Image (cartoon, rainbow over all chains, first blue to last red; front, side):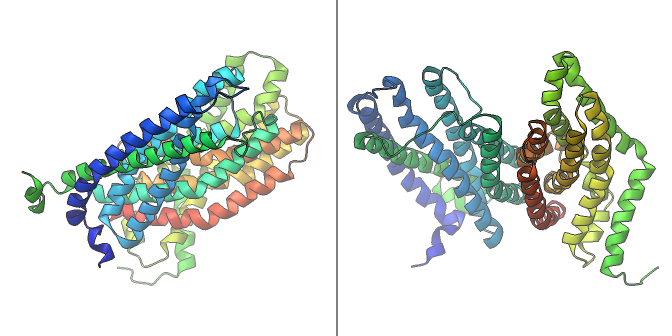
Length: 240
Length: 229
């Protein structure tokens, strides 16, 4: 079997079209089931009450905000090293979803912080680096949108994604250091003391978000392929 | 026609000297960044009020943030004129190491727009009542940090070469990447203010410079090739 069979837009386009419904339905089922366990089955936290339940959206969103940036950078590296057009299109399509998850993580964090810490926002290391991650996504998308020539915009934004992914750990540690200098650590999230059912709900939600990302990103890649292949003949075979 | 082959060190020296000469002949370009730094820093007392303690407390951060912005403002000039008149294309096809040419241009940028900030910052620090120790640390941290700003900025300048609205775009790309330099630089001065040891911040500032020195010219030269092809 040829591993690179689906590396060309021509073969990938129909494959993605067939896969999207499965991802989309799966995403819907998992997210509904995860929310059901998180909101109704999981016990109320004895310290934070029901306000804590937003973590079932917040934590998976934060995971995916970081994970998708890394995936985007991997596609950028693939694109630059193998000169693969599809990889650039994947990287470009991942960015808006990653930025959306970053934004959701920040907003849900604020909703959680208000009743728990009494503030919408604190300049904590995690929050601040998540905010900077949003800035990195915005920079990537602005550069992609700012260059008209697709070949150049693909390559330039790929370089930026790689520079960004190298910088993410440096930024995280710098912010952590800055935080310890200016103020004592204000929060201490302990993950291990979590009840099994809570972890289960969180993992189901993460799976749902993963399927959602796949569905949305593949849809966006298909639009991108259509956009770039408008002038070619093969696209018309799938238009009926 | 002069067909004499130029050795690489001689070419690099010429690239550097040319950038300095061009900047010196258009001195207003240098001075405008310089004056921006002075005006921007003096806006803070006007916005905050003349509370000496408050101003003293925020001075390191204010000076460092304004240094970041000044450095960023002068970035589009790093490669723009060479890109417009075709010099950059000639340099790329010249069969000389583009990485080192980019490094020279970044170095020239630092001499033109980073070094003046290092020299003027202690004077502005005096207006904020900074002590001798703090002024020394301010100048030293800027001396160690501004080259990183030029290096990282070189990547942004190369990526946004010749784009409409390049100036705002370069800010979006480069400012998030500047954050570690700001944190370590302003952190070192703040550490001196509260009587702590600043070597941690300075070492990290040096580490960022070392990393940037290796990776930034490489990335910038690759980005220049992408921009020109």
